Image 1 (cartoon, one colour):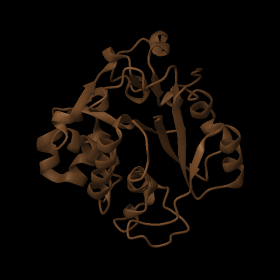
Image 2 (cartoon, rainbow, N blue to C red; image 1 turned 90 degrees about the vertical axis):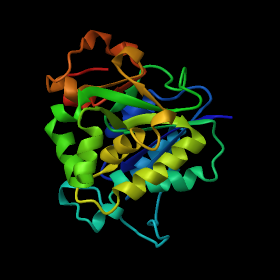
Image 3 (cartoon, one colour; image 1 turned 180 degrees about the horizontal axis):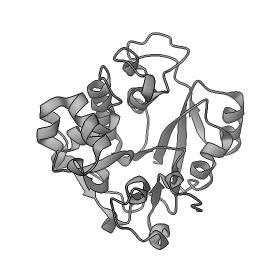
Length: 257
C-alpha cells in the first residue's frame, strides 16, 4: 500500500513555484497529489507530465458547486473564511481520504517546500507527527495575535507557553490524518483570521495530545526557516541538507537548494 504526499496550490502559482516540491518528492512507494484551486492548463499539464495526481475541488463544505475559492488571507472575511484555500484544503483532503487507500499521509505546503529525503522513512506509524518551529506562542507576535483573535482567552491559556508547530508540514496514519483534517476545517471556518495553524496547534495540545509525536530540530525531520531568518532561532544553515523536509526556504535571500 502506497503512502500519500499531498498539498494544495492555487492557479496563481507558476510552474517555477511548484518545481522544488515536484522535483524533490519522487520517492518509491509514494503517491503525490496536489489540490489545485482556480486551476490553470499550464499547471495541470506540468503536473501530469511529472506523474503528480491532481484534484480540482469545485464544491464547498455544503456540497454546493463553487467555481472559485478565496486565496488572499489579507482580504478574508468571516464569510469567505469557509472557502479560503488555507482552510478549505483540509475539508477537501478529508473528503478525498474518506475513500482513499493509503497507509500514511503527509500534508505539506508546496511553494516553499522541498525534500532532501523520503519523509515517510521513520515516520511514526501510529501517531500524528507535528513539526516545531521551536519558538513558543509568547515569543512571536503573528502566532500570538492569531491565537487570541481566533480562539480568545481559551487559546491563550492553552497555547501561550507551548511551542508553535507548523501546519505546513505534518502527517501520520490515514485515519488519524483524516480525522484531524475534519477538525482543523471545522475549527477554522468562520474565524476572523486565517486559522489553520491555530486550529492545528490547539488540537494537538488537547484532543490529539496523546496521539501526537512532537518533533524538534533534533529529530532532523523538518526545519522551518522563517523563524531562523527572523533571528528567533539559532540554526546552522550548513546542516539544512540533514533534514528530510525544508520549509520556508524562500524567506532567506539567495538561498539555494
